[in-house]
Each structure stands twice: as structure tokens, then as C-alpha cells.
Image (cartoon, rainbow, N blue to C red; front, side, top):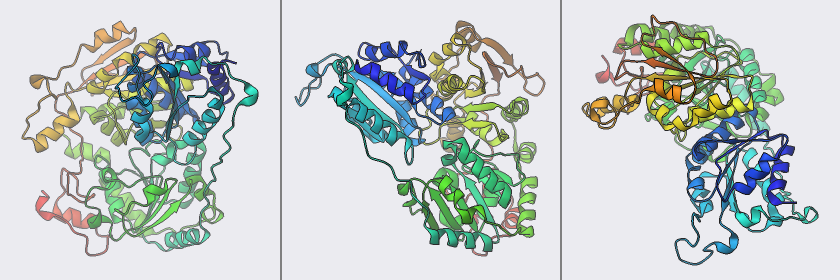
Length: 587
């Protein structure tokens, strides 16, 4: 059997239905084999970066691994942004690249290159993959496929890369002589003593809460476990940016999103807790701010994560580290039976913070340009309960994360660790192929939109159920907001007068055969029906802002626009004495 035929048959057995790629001479054998499959459809993308990120969308929606193919040289290196994003956001994808014939490679010679487009992609991506190797012996293909999938799907998930030279791709293999990969990954168990300690800590805490992080995005069954746990315990809970969409935000104990660009209410509640159960989150500086000791020195953290290296991070003191899959932790009998006595004073306080510092209240009192938030509110109110929101990078990401209120069956996907602009449209495409019944609302800014233009044609070409919403404020808004704050409003490369411009989006929509709608006044114009195959441009004023915002070197609860000192003291009344505030910075 031809090696590439074997690879495709192997993916068929894993129930993979779509493979994304870009044609090239040194991947043509693999794509030819895909084209002959009855159950796998090859999707020819219009840039390898689109293929790389579309495979991530496919993996996120299905819970399986995605597959992306590219030729050697520039084809392989064009995958790198997607590979890095999959690595930092823990998404399992098998990337397969072609390369020059083994007998035409430079091997150990010290020359830079022997054959055209010869590139050592394995060495380039080793830092951003869980495993990467070149296959120089056709008889180890079964071993390498089994290993690749096992590594990608086990523990903290992530990408792997298999580089297969052209002569190896077209080799004939003997099925009876194939070598197997026999290593198994043992699921880590919870230490009994730690579970007992955790249950006692939660039962005796006065101000407990939960953080739901990106680790909960890995599968639907895990999200159901979390949902049951939150409903039963009634613990106040927040999400991180990457955790948004993993829990039902209509639950009464939901307090919002924490972080640098977040909901003020969530940051306040977090700052006042005495015990925090952190599920699948790194607790990095974008979530906690850089002044962790000021805010969190009196909090007891219980951090549950599948990645042992994350738990070794010592920037958060006073924590119990639990290294296991979150589902294993939540299924433990003592956790299942955990009953937490309601603390009426804490419950009343949390509800008061939600009422007084919600984003709707923020919108009423602290916004000069409300249009982006009004747009998000309209989109949220008009979305079906089967909607997946896919959001790009920049101000559009923060507006959506702050304002969209997600129901139980809705999802929210964005890029966090690597955060490449141009992420949303390719991801939406991967999701649409994975699940045609899903309605996908893809939210992008005018900057990220331009980076992913090459992906748009796939939406009309395959009649995908995707609505693309472009929030056009005619600038790179998040950077211009940064330039106003720290560079005395000097804005090279971010506004029209200083070298940045936006094409006529209407004609781009026409060119890629998408229905086009233009909204000039979000408060007056009706939002068109959010159904697939259309592009909606929402015109926004220039130099919009994300509010509230945590400035550098401020404690988490002290976001701009600053609250008055007596108000800060009041909302922190639950915290023990000794919490440091910076009264000089407050208005």
C-alpha cells in the first residue's frame, strides 16, 4: 500500500471528516490520497495559515484532533503562526508537511540548502510543538501516527508535526511489517489527603469562589461536570478570557470575566475572596495584574491543572496544587458530595457588586463612545442558542468578551496565549466544516479582517453557516488606545493620518460573493438577520476605547476609570485589614 493512502485510511478510522491544506509539489501525494477517500474531504485553503488555524477550529468543535497539510519551504513556514497558536492554547492538531526527497537533502552537510524549498521545519517548530519529527523510514509510519495522536491528545493537549519527504510519501509499505507505538499515558489520580483538605477549606471558607479557565474548553462532558458543580454548590464564579464560553453565564452565581480588560464586578469579587478554586487556568498577569501580592496575599488558592509545569509557577503564593485532569477532580466522590453552607453575607455582597458594577452600569456611567458595546449587546440578544462566537484579536475581542452573555449551549472561541490577528475567520471555517448545524458569528476588527482576507472565499464557496461582523473603527484600536496612554497620542501605523488605512469592505464582500450589509448607526439601524453567508460592516467612531481597563502597577480591583477612594474602601470592606490601595491615583 502507498504510504499516503495508509495515512488517510488511518485518519478515516479516527473519524476525521475534513483535512485542510494548500497544494504544493511536495505534499501532492498526500492530497491525492485524501481526494480518493470516501469519508474525508480535503479543503483547499488559500493560504497555509488559514489551513493551520481552520484545523484548530475543527478540533475545538469536535473534541478530536485537526489535520492540516502543507508543502515544504514557504508552505511549511506559513503554518508556523497556526502551530504556535495551537501550542499556547492547547489545541490538538496533526500538521503534516512535505519535504524534498531524502536523497536530495543536504543531510549533515554544512551548506544552507541543496534542493529548492528544502527547509528543516522540524528544527524550526520544536519549541512550539509537543512533538515534531521527520519520517525517513516508511515502515515506521504507523508508529509515528500513533505516537503523534497519543501525544497531541494526552495531558495538556497541543500540536505535533510530521515531516514526510516526497519519496517516503510515495513509498510502498508492507502492512505486516509496520511497527506499533505501545506507550500509554497514565491518567493522574487525585491525592486523597489533598481532596479532604480542599473540601474542608471550602466548607470553612467565608468568601469562596471559582475561576473557570481555558482548560475547561477541551470537551463538552467536562463542561457539563463544571455546570453541575456550580449549580449544586452555588459558589460565585468568574471566567478568564480563555474560559469564556465554557460555562453558562445565565446562572445567578456568575460574576463576569476577570483580567486586565474585564468586568469590574468580577475583579472586585475576586479581590475580596478568601478561597479561590482555580480550574484549568494559569493565573497569569493578564488575569491577575502584576501586583499580585497586594491583592492576593490573603487568598488561599486551590489550583487544578493537567500541566505540572503550570503548577510549579510560584508567582501565586499560598496555594494547593492539584495535578490531574479537571474531570478526574470533579468526579471524585468527595467533590461530588461536597455541600457548602450558604454564607448569606457573602452572597448578598456578591449580588450587590453585580448590581452596582455590572457592564451595563459601566456602560451607562463611564463610556464616551458606547457604539461598540451597543453592537455587542444587539448581537448577543439576537444570537440563537446554537451559536458559536469566534472572536479575533484587538478591541473587538475585549468588547465581545466583556459584553456577550453566553447561554449554556453557546460557545466562545478566541486566541489567548499567542493571540494572532486574523485568527477568527479561519477558525470559524474549521468549525463550520466540523458541524454544519452550528451557526457561527465571527467578530473581527478592521485590522484582523485584512490579515485574513484570503479565507473569506471559502465561506461562499462551500455555503458555510458563518456571519462575519466587521467592527470598523478605521484604526488599530487597541494599539492606538495604548499610544494615547503611553506615547502622548503619537500614533504611527494605527490611524489613517499616520499610515494605516482600511479598504472598501463592500467591494471585498462582492468579490468573494458574500451578501453585504452596512450599519452606520448601531443605536438606530436594525441588525440584519444573523444567518450564514453574509458580511456585516458596523461603522464605528475612530479612537474607541475598551473600558474598564487595568493599568500597569495597579491592584486588580482598581481599574480605570478609577473609583473614588471612599467607594473603593466600601467595596473592599469584606477583605481583611492590610490590603494596600493607591489612593493618589483615584479620582
